[in-house]
Image (cartoon, rainbow, N blue to C red; front, top):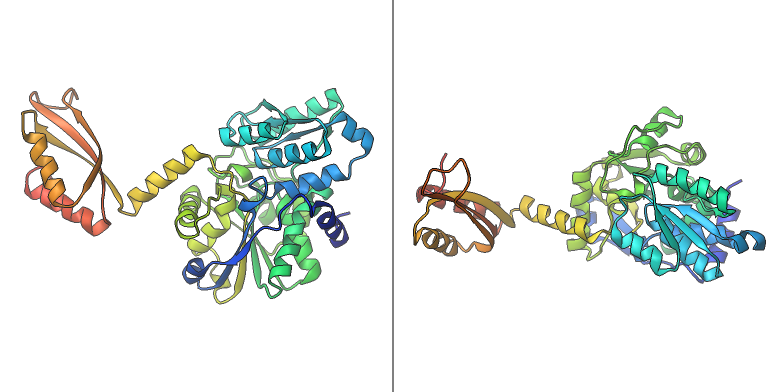
Length: 400
Protein backbone atom coordinates (compact mmCIF):
# COMPACT_ATOMS: atom_id res chain seq x y z
CA UNK A 1 0.00 0.00 0.00
CA UNK A 2 1.37 3.41 -0.99
CA UNK A 3 1.75 5.74 1.98
CA UNK A 4 3.88 8.62 3.20
CA UNK A 5 6.27 6.26 5.00
CA UNK A 6 7.14 4.59 1.69
CA UNK A 7 7.89 7.98 0.19
CA UNK A 8 10.21 8.91 3.06
CA UNK A 9 12.02 5.58 2.65
CA UNK A 10 12.34 6.22 -1.08
CA UNK A 11 13.86 9.61 -0.36
CA UNK A 12 16.56 7.94 1.74
CA UNK A 13 17.29 5.33 -0.96
CA UNK A 14 17.66 7.75 -3.86
CA UNK A 15 19.46 10.61 -2.10
CA UNK A 16 22.88 9.75 -3.57
CA UNK A 17 21.60 9.25 -7.12
CA UNK A 18 18.77 11.69 -7.82
CA UNK A 19 19.48 15.42 -7.61
CA UNK A 20 17.52 17.71 -5.28
CA UNK A 21 16.65 19.93 -8.23
CA UNK A 22 16.53 23.75 -8.12
CA UNK A 23 13.40 25.45 -6.79
CA UNK A 24 13.03 29.12 -7.62
CA UNK A 25 10.65 32.05 -7.97
CA UNK A 26 9.52 32.93 -11.50
CA UNK A 27 8.91 36.71 -11.53
CA UNK A 28 7.66 37.16 -15.09
CA UNK A 29 5.37 34.13 -14.98
CA UNK A 30 4.08 35.38 -11.62
CA UNK A 31 3.15 38.67 -13.29
CA UNK A 32 1.39 36.87 -16.14
CA UNK A 33 -0.51 34.54 -13.80
CA UNK A 34 -1.12 37.20 -11.12
CA UNK A 35 0.17 34.77 -8.52
CA UNK A 36 3.43 33.94 -6.73
CA UNK A 37 4.74 31.20 -9.00
CA UNK A 38 7.68 28.93 -8.20
CA UNK A 39 9.26 26.36 -10.50
CA UNK A 40 10.52 22.92 -9.45
CA UNK A 41 13.06 22.21 -12.17
CA UNK A 42 13.11 18.46 -12.72
CA UNK A 43 14.29 19.21 -16.26
CA UNK A 44 17.67 19.69 -14.54
CA UNK A 45 17.58 16.21 -13.00
CA UNK A 46 20.55 13.92 -13.70
CA UNK A 47 18.76 12.19 -16.61
CA UNK A 48 16.91 15.33 -17.67
CA UNK A 49 13.62 14.23 -16.04
CA UNK A 50 12.06 13.09 -12.76
CA UNK A 51 11.82 9.42 -13.79
CA UNK A 52 15.17 8.44 -12.26
CA UNK A 53 13.55 8.77 -8.82
CA UNK A 54 10.95 6.05 -9.27
CA UNK A 55 13.12 3.80 -11.41
CA UNK A 56 16.00 3.74 -8.94
CA UNK A 57 13.72 3.23 -5.96
CA UNK A 58 12.06 0.26 -7.70
CA UNK A 59 15.31 -1.44 -8.67
CA UNK A 60 16.71 -0.82 -5.18
CA UNK A 61 13.87 -2.92 -3.73
CA UNK A 62 14.37 -5.93 -6.04
CA UNK A 63 15.76 -9.18 -4.70
CA UNK A 64 19.26 -10.23 -5.68
CA UNK A 65 17.80 -13.03 -7.81
CA UNK A 66 15.69 -10.49 -9.73
CA UNK A 67 18.68 -8.24 -10.26
CA UNK A 68 20.75 -11.16 -11.53
CA UNK A 69 18.18 -11.75 -14.29
CA UNK A 70 17.91 -8.07 -15.22
CA UNK A 71 15.05 -5.66 -15.94
CA UNK A 72 12.91 -4.58 -18.88
CA UNK A 73 10.88 -1.40 -19.33
CA UNK A 74 8.64 0.31 -21.86
CA UNK A 75 8.96 4.05 -22.24
CA UNK A 76 8.78 7.04 -24.55
CA UNK A 77 12.18 8.06 -23.23
CA UNK A 78 12.40 9.56 -19.76
CA UNK A 79 11.50 6.44 -17.78
CA UNK A 80 13.79 4.52 -20.12
CA UNK A 81 16.76 6.70 -19.21
CA UNK A 82 15.87 6.42 -15.53
CA UNK A 83 15.76 2.61 -15.68
CA UNK A 84 18.93 2.44 -17.78
CA UNK A 85 20.95 4.63 -15.41
CA UNK A 86 19.56 2.88 -12.33
CA UNK A 87 20.40 -0.53 -13.76
CA UNK A 88 23.94 0.63 -14.51
CA UNK A 89 24.33 1.79 -10.90
CA UNK A 90 23.51 -1.75 -9.76
CA UNK A 91 25.50 -3.37 -12.57
CA UNK A 92 22.54 -5.27 -13.99
CA UNK A 93 21.14 -5.88 -17.49
CA UNK A 94 18.45 -3.50 -18.82
CA UNK A 95 16.37 -3.86 -21.99
CA UNK A 96 14.24 -0.87 -22.99
CA UNK A 97 11.30 -1.10 -25.41
CA UNK A 98 10.53 2.29 -26.96
CA UNK A 99 7.84 3.39 -29.46
CA UNK A 100 9.09 3.69 -33.03
CA UNK A 101 8.36 7.45 -32.97
CA UNK A 102 10.64 8.15 -29.99
CA UNK A 103 12.93 11.17 -30.61
CA UNK A 104 16.52 10.25 -31.41
CA UNK A 105 17.83 12.26 -28.46
CA UNK A 106 15.97 9.98 -26.06
CA UNK A 107 17.03 6.77 -27.82
CA UNK A 108 20.67 7.83 -27.72
CA UNK A 109 20.31 8.91 -24.10
CA UNK A 110 19.16 5.43 -23.12
CA UNK A 111 21.95 3.73 -25.06
CA UNK A 112 24.53 5.98 -23.42
CA UNK A 113 23.73 4.35 -20.07
CA UNK A 114 24.48 0.90 -21.45
CA UNK A 115 20.95 -0.40 -21.98
CA UNK A 116 19.76 -2.37 -24.99
CA UNK A 117 17.04 -0.54 -26.96
CA UNK A 118 14.31 -2.21 -29.03
CA UNK A 119 11.91 0.00 -31.02
CA UNK A 120 8.41 -1.51 -31.20
CA UNK A 121 4.87 -0.12 -31.56
CA UNK A 122 3.44 3.23 -32.62
CA UNK A 123 2.77 4.46 -29.06
CA UNK A 124 3.53 3.68 -25.44
CA UNK A 125 0.73 1.14 -25.01
CA UNK A 126 1.93 -0.98 -27.94
CA UNK A 127 5.51 -0.79 -26.67
CA UNK A 128 4.24 -1.81 -23.24
CA UNK A 129 2.52 -4.93 -24.62
CA UNK A 130 5.72 -5.91 -26.40
CA UNK A 131 7.83 -5.32 -23.27
CA UNK A 132 5.66 -7.43 -20.95
CA UNK A 133 5.78 -10.36 -23.36
CA UNK A 134 9.52 -9.92 -23.88
CA UNK A 135 10.12 -9.83 -20.12
CA UNK A 136 8.16 -13.03 -19.54
CA UNK A 137 10.04 -14.86 -22.28
CA UNK A 138 13.44 -13.76 -21.00
CA UNK A 139 12.81 -13.82 -17.20
CA UNK A 140 13.32 -10.06 -16.82
CA UNK A 141 11.57 -8.02 -14.11
CA UNK A 142 9.28 -5.43 -15.67
CA UNK A 143 9.75 -1.93 -14.26
CA UNK A 144 6.47 -0.15 -14.90
CA UNK A 145 6.68 3.62 -15.45
CA UNK A 146 3.69 4.36 -13.23
CA UNK A 147 1.65 1.31 -12.15
CA UNK A 148 4.01 0.43 -9.30
CA UNK A 149 3.98 1.60 -5.67
CA UNK A 150 7.77 1.82 -5.40
CA UNK A 151 7.91 3.88 -8.60
CA UNK A 152 5.15 6.19 -7.35
CA UNK A 153 6.91 6.51 -3.99
CA UNK A 154 10.09 7.57 -5.75
CA UNK A 155 8.24 10.24 -7.73
CA UNK A 156 6.57 11.42 -4.53
CA UNK A 157 9.94 12.53 -3.15
CA UNK A 158 9.61 15.68 -5.30
CA UNK A 159 6.79 16.80 -3.00
CA UNK A 160 9.04 16.38 0.05
CA UNK A 161 11.72 18.55 -1.56
CA UNK A 162 9.19 21.24 -2.47
CA UNK A 163 7.91 21.44 1.12
CA UNK A 164 11.48 21.57 2.41
CA UNK A 165 12.08 24.59 0.14
CA UNK A 166 8.72 26.32 0.71
CA UNK A 167 6.47 25.26 3.57
CA UNK A 168 3.64 27.66 2.72
CA UNK A 169 2.25 26.36 -0.57
CA UNK A 170 -1.33 26.96 -1.72
CA UNK A 171 -1.35 24.90 -4.90
CA UNK A 172 0.86 22.61 -6.96
CA UNK A 173 0.47 22.03 -10.71
CA UNK A 174 1.70 18.63 -11.89
CA UNK A 175 1.92 17.11 -15.41
CA UNK A 176 -0.05 13.89 -15.77
CA UNK A 177 -0.16 11.17 -18.42
CA UNK A 178 0.17 7.74 -16.87
CA UNK A 179 -0.33 9.23 -13.43
CA UNK A 180 2.67 7.91 -11.48
CA UNK A 181 4.16 11.34 -10.77
CA UNK A 182 0.94 12.98 -9.66
CA UNK A 183 -0.12 9.91 -7.64
CA UNK A 184 3.04 9.92 -5.53
CA UNK A 185 3.26 13.69 -5.17
CA UNK A 186 -0.43 14.20 -4.40
CA UNK A 187 -0.37 11.54 -1.67
CA UNK A 188 2.66 13.19 -0.05
CA UNK A 189 1.17 16.68 -0.17
CA UNK A 190 -2.17 15.60 1.25
CA UNK A 191 -0.52 13.52 3.98
CA UNK A 192 1.58 16.48 5.13
CA UNK A 193 -0.86 19.34 4.43
CA UNK A 194 -4.37 18.43 3.21
CA UNK A 195 -5.05 22.10 2.40
CA UNK A 196 -2.63 22.15 -0.53
CA UNK A 197 -4.56 22.13 -3.78
CA UNK A 198 -3.22 19.53 -6.22
CA UNK A 199 -3.90 20.19 -9.90
CA UNK A 200 -3.19 17.75 -12.71
CA UNK A 201 -2.56 18.93 -16.27
CA UNK A 202 -2.70 16.68 -19.30
CA UNK A 203 -2.48 17.16 -23.05
CA UNK A 204 -5.78 17.53 -24.91
CA UNK A 205 -4.37 15.17 -27.55
CA UNK A 206 -4.09 12.41 -24.93
CA UNK A 207 -7.37 12.78 -23.00
CA UNK A 208 -7.70 9.39 -21.28
CA UNK A 209 -6.66 10.43 -17.78
CA UNK A 210 -8.64 13.68 -17.76
CA UNK A 211 -11.76 11.90 -19.03
CA UNK A 212 -11.26 9.18 -16.42
CA UNK A 213 -10.92 11.77 -13.66
CA UNK A 214 -14.15 13.46 -14.73
CA UNK A 215 -16.09 10.19 -15.12
CA UNK A 216 -14.44 8.56 -12.08
CA UNK A 217 -13.74 5.37 -14.02
CA UNK A 218 -10.73 4.33 -16.10
CA UNK A 219 -11.28 5.14 -19.77
CA UNK A 220 -9.20 4.60 -22.88
CA UNK A 221 -8.57 6.80 -25.90
CA UNK A 222 -8.82 5.61 -29.49
CA UNK A 223 -5.55 7.35 -30.30
CA UNK A 224 -3.15 10.00 -29.02
CA UNK A 225 -1.49 12.87 -30.82
CA UNK A 226 0.47 15.54 -28.99
CA UNK A 227 3.91 17.15 -28.91
CA UNK A 228 3.97 16.26 -25.20
CA UNK A 229 5.24 12.74 -25.89
CA UNK A 230 6.11 12.15 -22.22
CA UNK A 231 2.41 12.15 -21.28
CA UNK A 232 1.03 10.66 -24.51
CA UNK A 233 -0.64 7.68 -22.82
CA UNK A 234 -3.59 6.13 -24.63
CA UNK A 235 -5.15 4.03 -21.85
CA UNK A 236 -5.83 5.21 -18.30
CA UNK A 237 -4.53 3.16 -15.39
CA UNK A 238 -7.01 1.94 -12.77
CA UNK A 239 -4.20 1.87 -10.21
CA UNK A 240 -3.02 5.47 -10.58
CA UNK A 241 -6.56 6.71 -11.14
CA UNK A 242 -7.56 5.44 -7.69
CA UNK A 243 -4.81 7.58 -6.09
CA UNK A 244 -5.66 10.55 -8.29
CA UNK A 245 -9.37 10.44 -7.42
CA UNK A 246 -8.46 10.33 -3.74
CA UNK A 247 -5.86 13.11 -3.65
CA UNK A 248 -6.13 15.36 -6.73
CA UNK A 249 -8.49 18.33 -6.60
CA UNK A 250 -8.64 19.46 -10.23
CA UNK A 251 -7.62 18.10 -13.63
CA UNK A 252 -7.39 20.23 -16.77
CA UNK A 253 -5.82 19.95 -20.22
CA UNK A 254 -3.91 22.18 -22.64
CA UNK A 255 -3.53 21.86 -26.40
CA UNK A 256 -0.37 21.69 -28.49
CA UNK A 257 -0.44 25.38 -29.41
CA UNK A 258 -0.55 26.30 -25.73
CA UNK A 259 2.20 23.81 -24.90
CA UNK A 260 4.41 25.15 -27.70
CA UNK A 261 4.00 28.73 -26.49
CA UNK A 262 4.98 27.61 -22.97
CA UNK A 263 8.10 25.85 -24.27
CA UNK A 264 9.15 29.02 -26.09
CA UNK A 265 8.32 31.17 -23.05
CA UNK A 266 10.46 29.01 -20.75
CA UNK A 267 13.32 29.10 -23.24
CA UNK A 268 13.24 32.87 -23.69
CA UNK A 269 12.18 34.09 -20.26
CA UNK A 270 13.51 31.42 -17.89
CA UNK A 271 16.48 30.23 -20.01
CA UNK A 272 15.25 26.66 -19.55
CA UNK A 273 14.85 23.87 -22.10
CA UNK A 274 11.64 22.07 -21.10
CA UNK A 275 9.95 19.33 -23.12
CA UNK A 276 6.25 19.38 -23.97
CA UNK A 277 5.14 17.21 -21.05
CA UNK A 278 7.14 19.34 -18.64
CA UNK A 279 5.68 22.60 -19.93
CA UNK A 280 1.96 21.82 -19.55
CA UNK A 281 1.69 23.45 -16.11
CA UNK A 282 3.21 26.69 -17.37
CA UNK A 283 0.90 26.52 -20.41
CA UNK A 284 -2.12 26.30 -18.09
CA UNK A 285 -1.06 29.44 -16.22
CA UNK A 286 -0.12 31.39 -19.34
CA UNK A 287 -3.47 30.72 -20.99
CA UNK A 288 -5.66 31.50 -17.98
CA UNK A 289 -6.83 27.95 -17.34
CA UNK A 290 -6.49 28.40 -13.57
CA UNK A 291 -7.83 31.83 -12.68
CA UNK A 292 -8.77 30.60 -9.18
CA UNK A 293 -5.06 30.61 -8.31
CA UNK A 294 -4.66 34.38 -8.65
CA UNK A 295 -3.04 35.86 -5.57
CA UNK A 296 -1.88 32.46 -4.29
CA UNK A 297 1.50 30.79 -3.87
CA UNK A 298 1.74 28.24 -6.68
CA UNK A 299 4.39 25.63 -7.52
CA UNK A 300 4.71 24.30 -11.08
CA UNK A 301 6.60 21.07 -11.69
CA UNK A 302 8.76 21.14 -14.82
CA UNK A 303 8.92 17.38 -15.14
CA UNK A 304 11.52 17.02 -17.90
CA UNK A 305 13.80 18.70 -20.40
CA UNK A 306 14.65 15.97 -22.92
CA UNK A 307 13.43 18.01 -25.84
CA UNK A 308 13.85 16.80 -29.41
CA UNK A 309 15.97 19.45 -31.13
CA UNK A 310 14.11 19.11 -34.43
CA UNK A 311 10.76 19.77 -32.76
CA UNK A 312 12.27 22.62 -30.75
CA UNK A 313 13.49 24.29 -33.95
CA UNK A 314 9.97 24.09 -35.42
CA UNK A 315 8.46 25.58 -32.25
CA UNK A 316 10.98 28.43 -32.30
CA UNK A 317 10.37 29.16 -35.99
CA UNK A 318 6.58 29.16 -35.59
CA UNK A 319 6.88 31.28 -32.46
CA UNK A 320 8.91 33.90 -34.29
CA UNK A 321 6.31 34.03 -37.07
CA UNK A 322 3.41 34.35 -34.62
CA UNK A 323 5.11 37.09 -32.61
CA UNK A 324 5.90 39.19 -35.68
CA UNK A 325 9.64 38.66 -35.46
CA UNK A 326 9.71 36.74 -38.73
CA UNK A 327 7.69 37.23 -41.88
CA UNK A 328 7.22 35.34 -45.12
CA UNK A 329 5.62 36.70 -48.27
CA UNK A 330 5.52 35.98 -51.99
CA UNK A 331 5.43 38.58 -54.76
CA UNK A 332 5.33 38.31 -58.55
CA UNK A 333 7.98 40.19 -60.54
CA UNK A 334 8.70 40.68 -64.24
CA UNK A 335 11.54 38.28 -64.95
CA UNK A 336 14.15 40.75 -66.18
CA UNK A 337 17.45 42.19 -64.89
CA UNK A 338 16.96 44.71 -62.09
CA UNK A 339 13.50 43.61 -60.91
CA UNK A 340 14.75 41.61 -57.95
CA UNK A 341 17.34 44.28 -57.11
CA UNK A 342 14.69 46.99 -56.76
CA UNK A 343 12.47 44.73 -54.63
CA UNK A 344 15.27 43.92 -52.19
CA UNK A 345 16.30 47.58 -52.02
CA UNK A 346 12.80 48.47 -50.81
CA UNK A 347 13.07 45.84 -48.07
CA UNK A 348 16.49 47.18 -47.10
CA UNK A 349 15.06 50.71 -46.81
CA UNK A 350 12.36 49.30 -44.51
CA UNK A 351 15.01 47.64 -42.27
CA UNK A 352 13.70 44.14 -43.03
CA UNK A 353 16.51 41.59 -42.84
CA UNK A 354 16.21 38.90 -45.55
CA UNK A 355 17.30 35.50 -44.25
CA UNK A 356 16.11 33.36 -47.16
CA UNK A 357 14.94 34.04 -50.71
CA UNK A 358 13.54 31.72 -53.39
CA UNK A 359 13.09 32.60 -57.08
CA UNK A 360 10.67 30.56 -59.21
CA UNK A 361 9.87 31.23 -62.89
CA UNK A 362 8.34 27.80 -63.66
CA UNK A 363 5.10 27.78 -61.63
CA UNK A 364 2.16 26.81 -63.87
CA UNK A 365 0.08 29.71 -62.52
CA UNK A 366 2.61 32.30 -63.76
CA UNK A 367 2.33 34.27 -66.96
CA UNK A 368 5.28 33.77 -69.30
CA UNK A 369 7.93 36.32 -68.42
CA UNK A 370 6.97 36.50 -64.73
CA UNK A 371 8.60 35.00 -61.64
CA UNK A 372 7.51 34.37 -58.07
CA UNK A 373 9.86 35.56 -55.34
CA UNK A 374 9.35 34.23 -51.80
CA UNK A 375 11.27 35.96 -49.02
CA UNK A 376 11.72 35.12 -45.36
CA UNK A 377 12.58 38.18 -43.28
CA UNK A 378 13.40 39.14 -39.72
CA UNK A 379 11.05 41.92 -38.65
CA UNK A 380 10.34 44.00 -35.54
CA UNK A 381 6.76 43.11 -34.78
CA UNK A 382 3.28 43.45 -36.23
CA UNK A 383 3.51 47.21 -36.75
CA UNK A 384 6.71 46.81 -38.76
CA UNK A 385 5.13 44.05 -40.86
CA UNK A 386 2.09 46.22 -41.60
CA UNK A 387 4.42 48.99 -42.77
CA UNK A 388 6.23 46.57 -45.10
CA UNK A 389 2.94 45.37 -46.61
CA UNK A 390 1.72 48.94 -47.13
CA UNK A 391 4.87 50.08 -48.92
CA UNK A 392 4.97 46.96 -51.11
CA UNK A 393 1.31 47.47 -51.98
CA UNK A 394 1.92 51.12 -52.86
CA UNK A 395 4.85 50.06 -55.06
CA UNK A 396 2.64 47.54 -56.86
CA UNK A 397 4.23 44.37 -55.50
CA UNK A 398 1.18 43.30 -53.48
CA UNK A 399 -2.47 43.32 -54.49
CA UNK A 400 -5.65 43.63 -52.47
